[in-house]
Length: 101
Length: 493
Image (tube, rainbow over all chains, first blue to last red):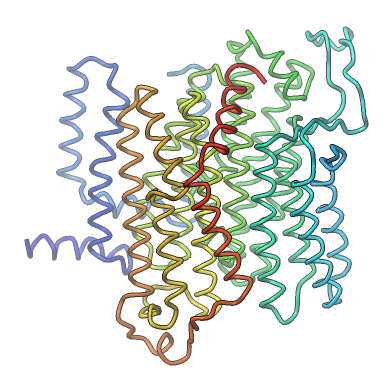
């Protein structure tokens, strides 16, 4: 457990002063968020696809956690990051609206 | 009771904005006129009777065949609608704006006429957006609102304010252009701008690719005006760069515009499931990312800014469900949350005014010095977190209920997770401000957060708490009205 704390402490340093408790709470919520969104999206799809995606999600958790550091870096006030996401979302929204999905 | 008062809710703040600009530098005159103007802004929505107002009094005319308009009747005039929802939203806006104006007048040695002028301009713009039944008129006032909001943040001064306002204007330009292009496509296709006429023209035309492009463009504009993903960082930056009293006003305006624009979108394109799916998906993302980001902040203003953004996501979830229950709960939550978040922003405003900082590392131990403020803030935290018997409980409960009724129980779980995270984030802020041991000189030696709050702040906080408890105990008069609006949206205006 001590090792885990040290590991997270090291990882959360990048967040600049955020407490370990806050980071962990946010991390757990994110870990719950992604599978719930997957369920919401894939409930109508067949079981095989759902199982494959669930396994992919587990792999992503093992290799990418903690997510909170990455989420925090992608949600800063930087102009370029905001512009990137605005451009991506504008494209996706138009794609969906025009019947792409 | 006079329906002629309807346009006054826009025209009076506009004229006041011009006058206050001219009065700038004459301190006593600005103070006196500022107070008088806010009284008028507060009173007019109360006494205005429900109805429609046609600017220029142009009647409904028969169709114009040479313009290839398919409708048998066309509204020529710019039309403003005023019913209970508009009354509630305009009054809420006026109430929060009154606090912002009074706090500026009572706290500043020299009152800025330009600053008050921009607040007036934003009130006029948001009131017009709420009432306009003309999509182009709505767009014009959205642009005015964006500029006024940026100006208010710039007026605070400081590099962070300039940066936030600059980004807001740049992305506002993108969103504004997007909305305008969408409107142009609709105008080019159907030849009308009146929202009721557009609704009639659109029925049966939702497969037209030009219309679908217009839907996408206007939805992108809605995302910006509502501060939803991917514009959430822009909005939260604006809230945190503004003084907390102005942040309270800005987030109230955002929630009001979110509802007003969403109603227009649902009235025009409500039957298009891809649109509601986009609204719902991005709202869910905003709720969770906003809550997560709130928890990671090291400054109380930024924490509240992200909380306000995540709550906008919650409103968006209700509306994005597209069901009667969901839309009604979303509208209801927008009103409740605007009040509750204003309460929290005002408590932080008080800390900011006295300590000149809201960074957690420089705060702490304020419970001893300001127990009343701590008590009110903990009530505010309970309200925003959806704890009974307060108002946000009534609306959050209904949103969760609506997700289940709509067949999306996993979204209900996400709403609960987001709410829990909001509570944890706010409690963290409370702990670090009021309960944590005081270790810095600035908090112990120089700053005195006296128990007695300034009268304006104290009265405002009490009124907001009473409003939260009142709506929480007697929600039906408000919820029923929100439900009837939802019915009108889905069945026909």
